Image 1: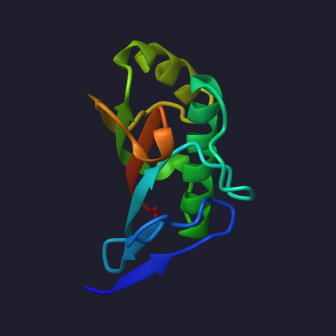
Image 2 (image 1 turned 135 degrees about the horizontal axis):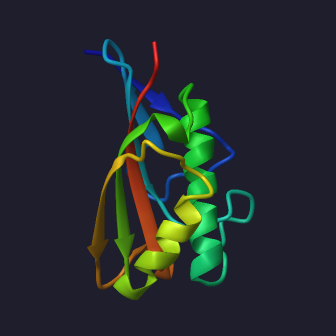
Length: 129
């Protein structure tokens, strides 16, 4: 098994000891690290839950593209929310970025996220051959 680091300036740079994503050769699987609502240029958090959800999907899109894929390649999506009351907003906004068949997904309520984020998502992609 070979691992290749995925890196793009179109998504926020890692703020810790992790890669934006890792692509595993052989199975063409990509593991995208958690994305929060950071603007990749300013590295500042966008304001409000709606804008953060959109920014997260834009960040996921950028990392997926850097890996050679897109959001339709997501097979598993994990959503972390500091307020599960925002779950419906995630559903509504997600439908504008991802179409059926939808990936498997989990939504997890958490007490806090890095940089005061309201939402974070990570994903697993399987790239078409």
